[in-house]
Amino acid sequence: MIDDQRSRTVGAAIVLVQGVVTALFPQISVKFIKSMIGKNFDNASELKAKPAYRRQLRAVGVGMIAAAGTDLLLQSAGETDDEPPATERDGE
Image (tube, rainbow, N blue to C red):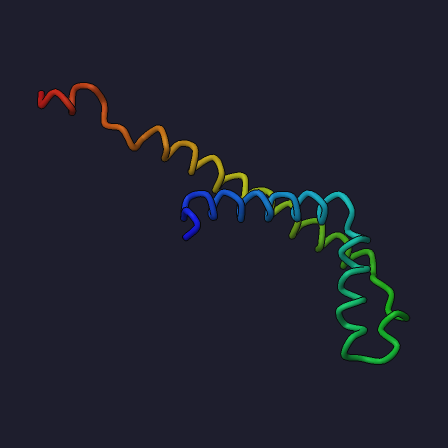
């Protein structure tokens, strides 16, 4: 079985990369969404994304970066907190 901690780290890294791509290049996300919609609907390629939608995609991307970055930072801080301080180990 795959290590839980490693899976969380890989998942957070994937979300971080997706957030960066979405924040910097929202047109790539628009193309992807059009292709997914096109599988179920006719004339989906004729849809045009409004500027407000692209701004919203950028905001979602920034949120993904913040969430994944925070998760990665908390995971690294949790690794250092796993070992108790020397005074607690000595029984003082």
